[in-house]
Length: 163
Image 1 (spheres, rainbow, N blue to C red):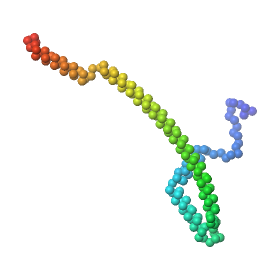
Image 2 (cartoon, rainbow, N blue to C red):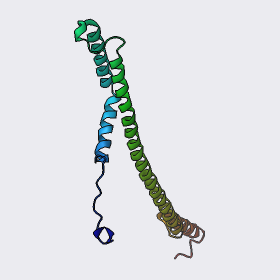
Image 3 (tube, rainbow, N blue to C red):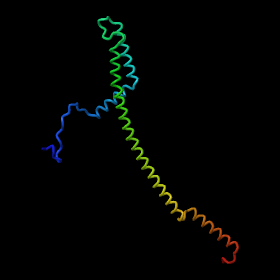
Image 4 (cartoon, rainbow, N blue to C red):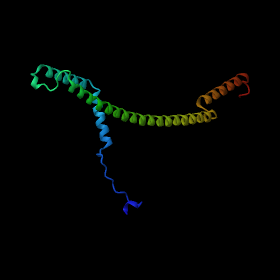
């Protein structure tokens, strides 16, 4: 009866598949992909293959576990490649998702920066327009200088009127 009620959660269904944490698996796959993309992996893989081939060609026949043409080695390399490829793809998909989120955040930040710049541009234009009507120090100096010139010119032309 509780399964039909909307105010209560459903009982968990049992699954035949094993449960796993997708984030933990994704982090694990990224670690593996990072290791597979290093020179250290190539060196170790080369060492293992050389030891494998040397062992199976130089030891007494009863100690050899993979005779020429090394079919077991081929099988192991194929198995490694069959797991490596999907793990690398999973790591790339996770990186693409992170890049997509970062790109979206950058786009939003750019939009905010553009809006802020446009706002500041309008404010500066308004200040310039307002300053066009305000007497500045240079304008006042030039006006006072012109007045002093005019007074000097009048005093030179009309010396008698001053006294």
